[in-house]
Amino acid sequence: MPTSERSLNLPNAITFSRFVLSLVLFALMQAGGYWLTAAGLFVFAVLTDVLDGWIARRYKLITQLGRIMDPFVDKFITSGTFLFLLPVTQQSGVTPWMVVIVLGREMLVTSLRGFLEQRGADFSASFSGKLKMFLQCVAATAAILSMHPPIAEWSVGGMEFTAVRDVLLWSMVAVTVWSGWDYVQRAIVLLRGVETK
Image 1: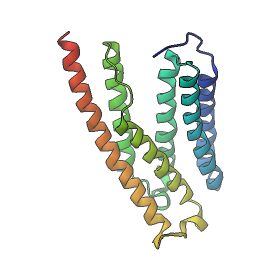
Image 2: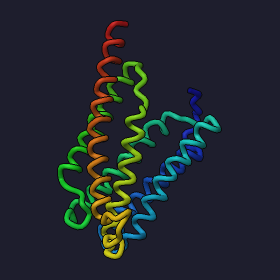
Image 3: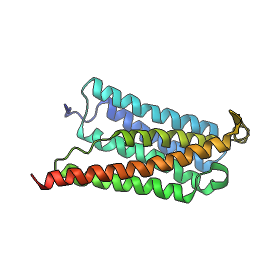
Image 4: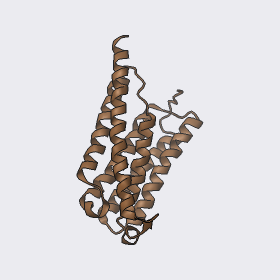
């Protein structure tokens, strides 16, 4: 994959702006009462991830800095969002076990990636990782929206919105666990290949 040496490019600037947006998001969540704004900001920030990735690939602006910062910021905003929802478990549906599983998976995969890529192995994102990220974003958005009382009272296809939110949250947890196991299996295969070289 071509790598640009110019780290201060548009995709990296967008990634940095997403980091700043995440801090604004966390401040809104801590303040309380701005849940619709927080949900909109979260969705906007997540969409910038799609944009910077597309620009980097389309115009061959992939850098080492971007390869490090982009997944870090993604994990920062999703994990941070779940952490800031934890003090309001009853209203958000986010439980301590969910947060432990999300954080544990992210720390495990990040450690494996650093260990293997230092040894020249390609440990880029897989389908399970992308599906995990998608479900985390959808579930986090639903959890933030459920903090807004009028939305919490909605019904979706005959189901209460909070029930739909809980299904999304636990589906996210299941896929997060599966994704972690998938990456561990990939790491074992890659490590065997590195050791036999």
